[in-house]
Amino acid sequence: MESLDFSGREQLYYQLYNILFKSITDGVYREGECIPSENELVNRYHVSRMTARKSMEMLVSQGMVVKKRGIGTVVVSSHPNSSPQKLVSYSKKTTEDKLSTYKEVTSLETVAASKEVAVSLQIEKAATVIRLRRVCMTDETPLFLETHYFEQAAFPDLANHDFSKESLRAYLTNSCYVNWAHAKQQVFSIIADPESAKLLNIKSGAPLLHVKRISYDTQDMPREYVETSYRSDKYHIEIKLAI
Image (cartoon, rainbow, N blue to C red; front, side, top):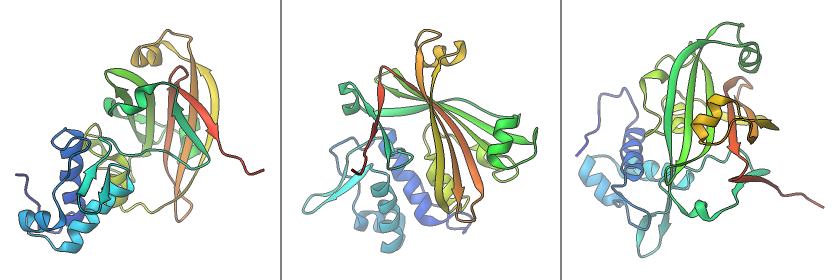
């Protein structure tokens, strides 16, 4: 059993959340199965009920588990809900949305910020940034490719984590204490370059739905810039309008 670090270097609820998160993504608890109850977590890890409850609430907020009266807390998804906003949703055209998805890290490196990245993050051009690339998969089929950029000076420890198993947003929120406020995004239609085509297992030149998003904290400072390329044969845009 994985133990908690009580030294105070990392909040207990986040450590416990991370253990549960990994257990779900690794298949220890599968969809339809119950994760340990609050009482079980309290007794197993010697934490307060509030700590156990907060870790479970994080999983609920990410759409990974739901609480069912008389049953317990049930796993409903093996991956966190990463929908970036409310107006535009990316809906799968096929029945693949019923399958479990997971993310594979293809690269995690430090690079010099391009002009676009520098402007988006409001940093100096050529400043050092961390670039994280991941492919979202389902049943070994690539669905979309996402490339995240972070100012290295703001997140010096980020490159030491495995975000194929750990939730990126939860890490930024709970370990880096980023208070998210809002995001701006643009949607484009592009064609796949050879590198993207290879990672997405499609032909070079195939159409992609391309989204650029800048996420801001409560001080209106940009903390993350991400570009996501969705396979157009797997996704479409759905917009809810007031009329």
